[in-house]
Each structure stands twice: as C-alpha cells, then as structure tokens.
Image (tube, rainbow over all chains, first blue to last red; front, side, top):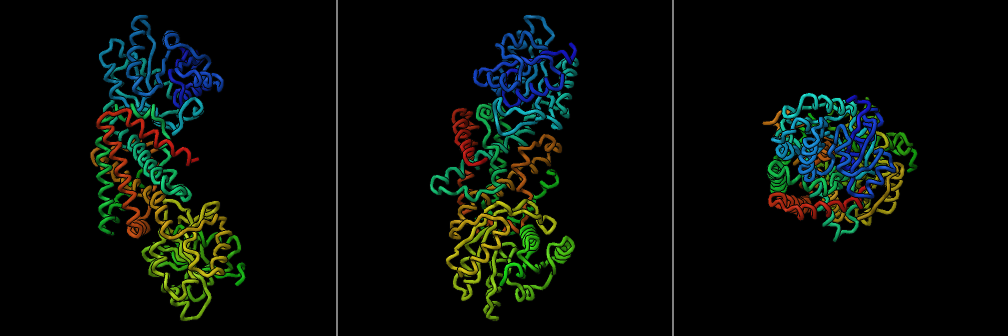
Length: 288
Length: 288
C-alpha cells in the first residue's frame, strides 16, 4: 500500500470522522475517502460539504478501504470493530481498522483474542469541540494535539507504523499507554469536566424557572465553565457507562471536595476556604 | 466638576482598579489618576506600567479625588466605604465614592443609613480575568460588558448620572437591580463557576500525587472548565463568605445534580444519563 494512493473508509461522519476525512484527503494521505453514515441527512451533508468522495454502505466500505476508521460512539464501536475484523478474516485481507473512541478498555478487551487482533490499532486523537455532526467538522482540528495509542503490543508492528504515519499527517503527537491507564487518566482530565459542566447547566437552568433573567449577568467565566454542557448525549452516554468505575471514583472525590468547600462556607471558616483556594491555585503550574 | 478635568482616585491597583484607571485616563475622563495601594511592590509596578499618575496615601486620595473608586476585596471595601463617607461629611464635600465589588448586599447594608449615603454609588462592572495584580490590568477590559448599578434610589441622582458617564466612557452597558437580587444572580452565574473550578482542580491535583503524568492528556475542554481555579483567594474568600446564603443554596442544588448524575452512572441507567445530558444541553439556548 502506498500512502498517497490509500483508500480510507470513515464510518461515522461526525465532528471527528469528518475532520479526519477532510485533512487526510487535503494533505494527500488518502487518494479516496469513503464514508459510511447511518443518518441520511448527515451523509448527504458530508457529501455536499466535501468531507468524503462517496457515501457507501458499511460492507462496501469495509471491503474497499485500506484503512477503516471507526468514528462512531463507543457503545457502537465496541460491536463494530470485531465485525470488521471478522470480515478481514473471511477475506484473508491485510486491511487495518482503527477506532478513535474516548474510552479504550472495553474496545481493547472486546478484541483481545480475535485472531485478526493484529490488524486493529486502538487510538484516541485528543481533539474536539462541544459541537457534533458533519457540520462541526473542521480542517486542522488535530494539529499539534496528542494522539493516544493503546495496547500497541497487541497490534502488528506494520499496522502500528501505518497508523503512526496517518496521525503524523494530521500533525498529532503520539503517546503510548495501556487502555486501562488511558481510561483512568481521561476520567480525571476529560470525563469529569463534562459531568461538572452538565451539572452546572442543570443547576442554573433549574433556577431560571423562577428567575427569568438569571443569565443576564452570565460572564465569560460562566460560559467557559459550562460550555462542555453542550456536548452530545449519543457520544457521552456510552463514555460515562463504559468508563463507569473510573468516572464514579472521580465523581466521588469531586463531590467530597465540593462538600469540603460547602462546609467551610457554611461555617464561615475563612482560613479553610483560603487554604482550599490556594491549594486549587496550584493548577497554575499545569495550565498555560 | 467637568468630566475632562476630574481627578479620579483608585484604591486598590489590581486587575479591576488598574484597568479602570488606565482607560479613564486614556479616554480623557480623568485628568489625573491618583492610586492607593497597600502593597508597595504593586504600587511601584502600577506607577512603572503607567496605570496611575501618582501613588498617594489613603487620606490624600480621599481628600483630592472628585470620584473615589474602591477596588479592594469586598471584605475590606465594606469597612472602607463608610470611612470615606465619614470623611466627606467632615469636609462637607460633594465628592462621590463608588465600589466595584462582586457582592453587593453587605456593602449596601453597611452604608444604608449613612448621612452621606447619596454620595455613594454601588456598582459591579462585570468584567475580569482569572489573573490579578497591576500586571493583569489591560486596556479595553470593560468594553461591551454589563455594569450593574445597585440600589441607585439610595444615591443622589447627580451622583448616579456622573457614574453612568464614567461607565459610558468604559463602553459598559448599565443594568439596574436591587443588591439582594444581584447577589442571588451572581451566585448562580459566577460564584458557583468558581467553586466548581476550584473543586475540579483539587480533585485532579489530588490524583496527581499517585499518577504523575495525569495532565499529559489534559485537553482544551479541561483547561476551559478549570481555568477559574487560578482565581485569587484574597478576592474570593470574602465573596464566598459575604454571599454565603446564596452560595450555599446554589452549592446544595449543584451537589444534588452531581449526585443524580453519579447515581445514574452507578446504576448504568443509560436513559436517565441521556435525560440529564439532554436537559443540560438546553444551555445552548443561552450560550452563543
């Protein structure tokens, strides 16, 4: 397979699948991009916007693509990747399938003993916005961001190398880790942020029922803290349930911290509030 | 008093006081800006950066300024504004004092029966960043943002008019409300966002003790949700304690929402998680 003549199949033409299709084609990695999309409106939009060359049925895509990218919510992906590997086995082909999901443990475990496991590379390009659908796709989305490769020792070295080349074209910085380590870390630095934003939105929207103009005073700080609450349920329900154990653990710690704060405010314990804030301020060390 | 020849005194040369001094001078509202700053390093920096014309002692500033702007943390401001009004009374002067604090009920109540109450205008320019000190001051900080005027019926109409002119020069949009209404609304759309960010920072920093590389995967979503955790304790301890009742109420609602989420994840109740997320998504109506 020569990279400049690859056929790439992208299953799921949303923000991630669409953006990936766009840059792989524009930057010459893909000669042809085939798309699969179960929502006909989104499929037509992806064609019209020019994210893909053709929208084709699932089986056609899996048969024709050199690399199949599974960019559907992780609940569906866990079932789809083994099906695609089954099809590779029937055909005896050397194609590659990758997923781009935000939780990795279940998908790696669902494929672990598949005879064609070597042809699967599990990745998480750490990029995105709070928007979804082909309309949200944008060029350059991945530039300069990290891409996590999970459990690469289960993939064939040749497959890993080709996928490293694919992400190099997207200007992503590769990181390697175990699937379980990935899921623990993302629970802390991504999944919890979404839950706290959802809870914040629910809190304020609730109050809006009595106080119609409550958002008149909303400032930049509020918008920044709550913006992830716009995130799509189709994507986030499976993430939160698949990463349940880690997410629960971090939510419990988080609720504990909120309660420490609450109790300090209730007691008007200024020293304790100051201590908590100054401890939290250490985040400056991490954030630019 | 002619606006273009006013002497403005700014007490507290931090982000808000410094930025306000800068634009009032640059835009010709102030002929002279006097600054008061208890931290000599910050005072010297404000002079060097050119935020103020002179740094003077508190009493000099109060004696010489046509308008005194109190831009210190709200705990100190509650004591300082009545002292300044006392001094106006001794002198029999028609000077004006304003505060720019983030909570309004206590400061309005501490001044309510002062014989010179008419010379005080209580305002909250809704602008800022998570940084503090004269180094954080910036031109144009207030442009296009809202400025809340509280309990203006307690101020003399002439004083209100002059302060409206001051904020017009800063390109701020005036809003008028009762101090207690202000504090309720800001608890929901500003104070709680800071507490959720502090708690998030504490949660992840805690985990970092075991997992050194946990921030390697931190993405834009995390940064945006946690950035307010950089906010200064000197400012936030008095806000949270002065607005204690509202803040506690909103924290309780928030913890309740987090627990609803937690329980849905614990039960793997996908329908309930979806319902909560879709309800939270309604924040799209509010955010651009």
